[in-house]
Image 1 (spheres, rainbow, N blue to C red):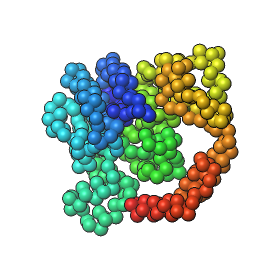
Image 2 (cartoon, rainbow, N blue to C red; image 1 turned 90 degrees about the horizontal axis):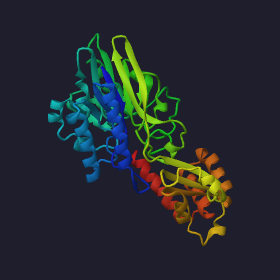
Image 3 (tube, rainbow, N blue to C red; image 1 turned 180 degrees about the vertical axis):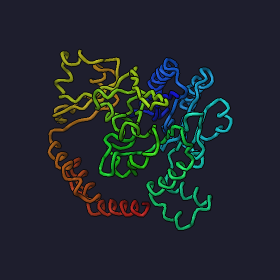
Image 4 (cartoon, helix red, strand yellow; image 1 turned 60 degrees about the horizontal axis):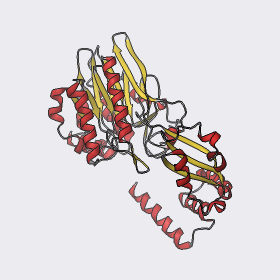
Length: 395
């Protein structure tokens, strides 16, 4: 069995107000072409199909056309799950009759315990879920009340879920898992550029790779770079396009998909690159350099998008200058513009170094001072403190 592994399409995503739909459709055309050239037995989409739970009409229309071309026009099976960005119940609509065309879609926890299988392979499709989903599911299953009450974290829930999935294993078959979570090699590891929302997983619940060791291969979504994969058999495909500046800063990472070939002799993986139509270029230069023809003539001006940070910048020298307009006149589309102000460099450096040792309230206080050069007033401090108290209650 040969599968194409992709994830994190985030159809409908924007970048600072600029639609990425054309770029996503360009990436999709390449994904479909790769699938046809490789003669795959299915395309795996490991969650975050849409960018939000209630996608816009243009996003729904675009994804519908993508699925039509894969599944109806080219008769390629689809194995898809919902991620944390998807509206699980909304996406679930139509699931029952999709299976008649080999479109397999799991968005609810209870669907994960029935594999899609052939004579050689079992594919378990475990969508994103939270501990409350597990408590509701196991309560309906009549599990001991005390055990259900002790499901507090995603690790608690996953231990129960994977144990029950493993009970469904058929001997002499390869066991494949498709899922959408943050997975690290060990509990001490951090994932850089992990998700679509943060630069580190941080407070997001993470799982460790050893919990998946009974599977022959795991296809993951949620992390946008394949280099975050815990090991050779637990893999992230990464997103097919760059979604933010942090991803664009990862030089030479390349976006693409994996071709996973499952045979009696083992499982092999081949990376297939996706070329961007409109790339996202990050420039961090002084104002003088950015305006130097010798510099910008070597850039893909009027072709790609630019995220520009002006370094060593003194705002007082440019009070009458329309900075963005001048840069767009040279470079074309500037999707992000930032400054490294000379007067704030040292305070920002101090904030970055000390923030790990500060309370949340003090971190806000330092950040405010780095921007305004003033301390928070007593009333502002009270507001900040009350906000963190309320957030603590929600946890």
